[in-house]
Length: 75
Image (tube, rainbow, N blue to C red):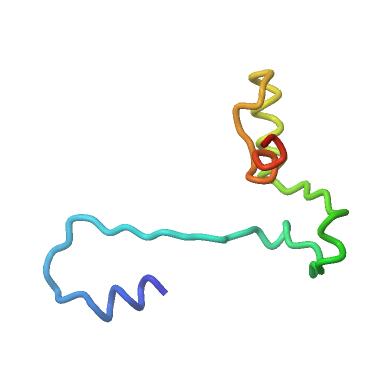
């Protein structure tokens, strides 16, 4: 998509910097099942991101990184 937009709007002039952003991207390996509202309360996601957060917190022996869900639970 970024290349299509670039080709559509580029005038041929030299460009110094191009930025591209992504949101909501997950690995296909983290997508395990279609979710329903009934299953949300029982899910314990153990994604690659959550594993990484746990390892970093373990290394520093405190919660230096939190997920949004953990942050809401602490309020």
